[in-house]
Structures are given as C-alpha cells and as structure tokens.
Length: 234
Image (cartoon, rainbow, N blue to C red; front, side):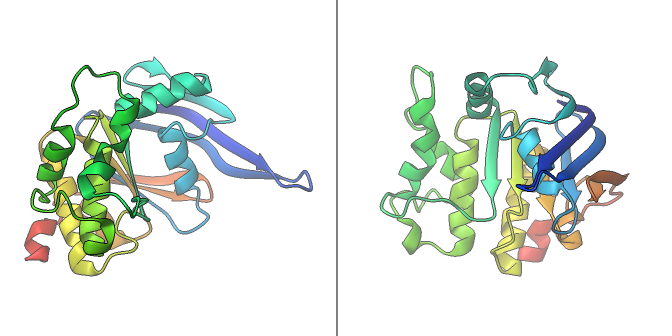
C-alpha cells in the first residue's frame, strides 16, 4: 500500500536557516494494516502525515502509493488521488456548523465523478453508528459524535487509505475509546489506517507502532496483543 524510501523534508526559515523536519525515512505499510506513528510535538510526525496524505511533497526520496509514484505528481493529480484514495480525520472536526451531519458527510461527493452518489452519506454515518443523527447539526452533537461525523466524511468516498492525525486529542477518554473502536472495526473490515498520536495508550490499540524522533524513525514494532477499545468504552 505505502512505500516510503529515504524521504527527507527540509524547510527554510525566513533567515535562510534550513530546518530538517524529516531525515531519510523509509517505511512500508501493507494493505489492511493499522499503524500508529508516535512522537512528541516537533518530532516530525505531522510532516510525515502531510506527505502520506499528499498535502506536502518531500524534498528528497520516493513515495509509492499502491505501486504508483505519487511524490512527483502535480497539484491537480495529487488532489484527485486525495479525493478518491485517501480519507482524512483531524484533531479538530472541521464540520460546517449550519448544515446537518449527513450534509457535512456528503461534502467530498461534490468533487466526485461517480454517476450516482445517492445514499452514500447515510451509509457512511451508519458505519459509525450515527444513523439516528442524520439531520442533527454539529452544535446538537457531543464532541465524540462530531468526530464520528468527521470519520464518516472521510469514509464517504470509500478510500483505500484512512489517515488520522491526533483524532482523539479533543475528546475525553470514553469518547476517545469509542472513536478508536470504530477505527478497529474499520480495520477488521479491511481498511488500511495510519494514526498519528503523541499518546502511547492510544497507540497500543494499533497493530504496529512506529516511533519518530527528531525527524527519523527510531523504532517500528508489532503490538503483540492490541488493546480492544470497545471493551474500555463499555
């Protein structure tokens, strides 16, 4: 699914000083894996997530997604890949306050070339357990429910890859466990998920944990027995 080979990313400060956000990262993620990328603030994990999601391009190195070299694609081609192949979930929910849950979920379909998108928003909300909240606006939903709407929005185009950047950062522990339980369910159904977090407890729910420090991967380990979030949420 994902093959990163010797990826580096360098930014320049206004003074001209170079900042190495990522340094020589090689990482392979197979289809159907649930991987956590763990690191402290400033470690490079969000930069890595942006490159995985085609929101940024590496300074050097190769990125292949489903066998295609995507790092060198132009902005329009990258946008098409993002819309069709990648779903995003962020720490902040980015829901439009004046429209309903199902209308928020259906927003990515405005850019879809599918012939028929009827019912796709409803089905996505059913997948996250919100079939009874279709017409509710964000202000009428709890924080956990709003994040589940955001997950449904990420799923509505049926992407190959789901990227989640600190998806539990604004949630209490129970709501966080409910959200992680949804990710685990989606992964059991075959979805590939990469989750960025600073929280080791959250990472322990994943199948694999890659640790990043100072722009480099320093460990990449399988989790022998991932914690089951649904049991903790009950």
